[in-house]
Length: 255
Image (tube, rainbow, N blue to C red; front, side, top):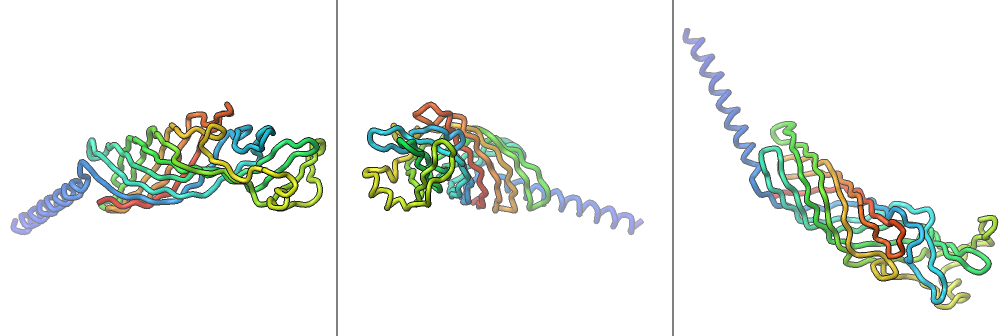
């Protein structure tokens, strides 16, 4: 009988201990959480066909071929509000670099001028508003999925030609002769545009809007995130359906 009572008291004590520990863990999800976050981006400007991203005096603008992803960075102050132990609202003030690599091409009277390895950089301040849902994988580990809209504003950026110039035959599409440095070609064609502002009347619009989604794994106060943002607005001033796309990995800490 005494052994039975001791056994039941031990089980009761264990259940109470587990309940207290669970409650202590649940209180870690405070209504408001603030943090910092940093990471790397991989972005591309989609639909970059005929934007007026560079201009030579009294000559038509060029177009982009063979667009590629470009690496960048992101930094953020984060703000979370918990509607319950599992559902939360997440926002942030982000600084992101976006852009793309491409082959910039322009018409000339007898050939097409090609500038491989040209780059477009965009610097944004961005505010996302996501709804998230948390899964408790273990006492210290949580998995969250989240998604929602974002707004962003371009605060700077430049578009520049690659260092080398090629001449492409208009009929065959083959390269004519060898490559020439941009500096050497500038001696032939005076006033050739080397660089231009990304955001301008002849470039891209500053305001952007889209939707994003992501997953977040948290270990106590440290979080590892994977996100992707889909731009929904046409950024081109030339009517070309130019939209941003960027994926990023992040590491964050909540205070």
